[in-house]
Structures are given as C-alpha cells and as structure tokens.
Image (cartoon, rainbow, N blue to C red):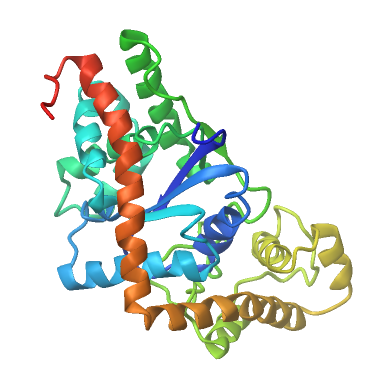
Length: 334
C-alpha cells in the first residue's frame, strides 16, 4: 500500500512496434486504473536484451514506448512511468530471488521453451531466468495486483511461489500479488491466423495492426483479415476470425457483443470488416497525434524520465533494503 492505495505494476518490452493487441489488451485497460491503484508502468528494457538488440535502435524504441504510454493517456504525475534499466533494484533483487528459485520451476516455463526454439543461436542464461527478473519487477514495489493476459499467468504464478517461499523463511517481506485481467480485449488475435495472438514479431505484415499504422494501412489490413465461408457474423468459437473482429470492434466502440452482432445482422463480411477498420482508425488517431506532439517536446519527456526514475528508485530501495537485512547482508554505512 502507498498512501492508502493498493499497488499495481506492469510493463512492456522495448522491442518491435506496439500492436493493436498491446493497446487494447493492456495499455487501454491501464488508463482506468490510476484512480484506484498506485501504478508503476515500466519500459522493461532489461528483459529486451535476452535477444540481441542494436543499441541505438533499442534506445530509440525505449523512448518511443515511454512516450506512447503518455500519448495513450497515462498521466506521468499520477502514474510512475520509467525505464527498468534506470532502477538498479530490479537487477539486484533478481539476483537475490535467483537464489530462491528452483531449476525445475524454470524448466517448466513455456515461454523459455518457445523463445529458445526461435533463437537457437542464443539460448542464454538470461532467457532461462527471465521469470525471476519478472518476479523482481513485481515484488520490488510490493505490488498487490498485476494486469496479465492469460498467457502470462504462469509467470505470475512463479512470482507468487517465490514470494511465498521467501516469506515462509523470513516472515512477511513481500506482498503476494494477484492477477488483474481486463473484462474485454484481454487477448486480441492475429488477423491472418485467429488461433494465435496478435504479435509485434509476426513475420506476416498483414497479421498485426501497429499503433503507428496510417488509416489506409489499417483499412487494407482489415479488408485482408481471415474470416470463413459461413457468411454469418456470430460470436462463437467455430468462427475464430469473426469472433476476433467482434472483440476488436466491441473494445474500440465500448459496445457489447450482443449489440455488435445485432448491428451487423444480415450484412456481409466486407461491410463488417470495413466498419471494424474504421473503429480502429478512430481509436488510434488521437494516440498518434499526441505521440507526434510529445516526440517533439524533448525537455518534457526528459523531465518525466528523470522524475519518475527517482520515484521508482525510492520505493524500490525501501523493499531492497528490507530484503538485504532479512538475508543477512551488512548494513550500509550512511
């Protein structure tokens, strides 16, 4: 708790370009949370280097992502928006928690298996211990809740296991976090393969809508979206392409599934896909315009980076000093 409010932590990697799935599944949900929670939103650039990055490009993407957080509506006065690499407590706590995490637990993590299969030339220790750094991210701020998609629940479970194990040895040191799953848009699927999640790393450019895609590109991608031959706009598992488009439309327009199905009753797929594309364009336009404006205001963004890093560092150190004392590290001489 901070000032009587529960703490929430989340973050995104500074790799690739954010997709509509990242926005509707995570970022859009974050906007409603700052009144209820004390929120820490990180650009998790430490996680990014488990895969080799071009240094200048990583710096550029990290700044763009932080700017996008603000452009999307996150107020940096009400939310702590910062670079993970600027708060050394993340790395320090991760090392300590590595010593309280079992190899068998990490061996069971599905994301390691998936990433190792994709990057066979660089299966590094950081990739293997990635969930421990994620646990450190969350526990460092005594987070009560973490917004997660269903595919991230396994990482939150290992975080809870590590926290409970540490607490069992040293007392109530860490808050054991709970998942926060948004009611809509929790998982936006690929436009070309609606059985898999929309991804910024998808090799098919038509599979994902990028946050910076211009209106013509957005409409073109939706026109090419995979549907089926049923010619029925129904919300059912047997029609994953249509179901995904309805999820996107409803999340962008704040309409219920029933309202959307009724709206498109008797209409063709072409008209439906165009309407979904136009709804997405309407949602992305103000974000893109604000991003463009903020990107030109270097002094403002630099100020946010400095001020929020100091705030994050303050709360991170409160937890880190407590942990260090519990495990027996020598006290620092002031």
